[in-house]
Length: 278
Image (cartoon, rainbow, N blue to C red):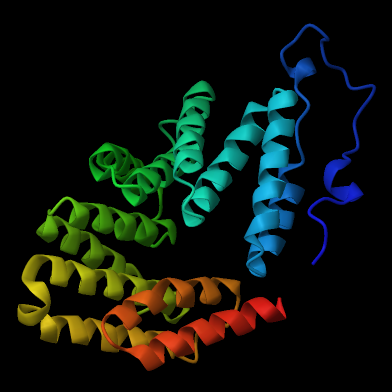
């Protein structure tokens, strides 16, 4: 496993003769190399090396702060928010959410798609740590911006609908949650490239049915969702890449919960093989 920083990761060519007014705000900003930072982050995550991914992000967030690079900090805290949530680091994730939203406001991004993604990510953090009510207005604002600013088939929309469905289920607003999952499936279920996303939605729907109807009354509908999701995950159209590994890890616990133990084990085995080969 490689060290988390190498020379080329932190050195960046600088222009010493650029025509910048030394009294301007721009003259005091030392931008971090966001593109290369995210490439390195992806390399860590592709092999599920979350420890070095965390260190890498936190290092560069501090560099962005020191260089007064608000845009770089915004991008990196947005990434850190999601990783901290994945690692179940409650306080760190909530702090990153607050910092990201403050930076979005500072940079004037709160009304565009970039800011909406930050709203969605922050809402997901609050939902994940038990405060769905605080996350709901963030989701509602993100939804309005996404639907106005994105193409109808944009891949970001199903993610919004899925996460909003989860939050609405937590709030007991089951019919609204189902409407969100139906929107997500409309965009993914018949697209072979998005079979993994459709599987996630179907498993979320299984959980929603149980929450609303219980295991007994909802049994048939739950099993139908599970069978459809399994078929999608076994599809030959899905590339077995790092995203597929993520999908397998995300789906496996739900299959295990409902007694599909062989599917649970197979999905985790697939994910492990992909990460080990990265």
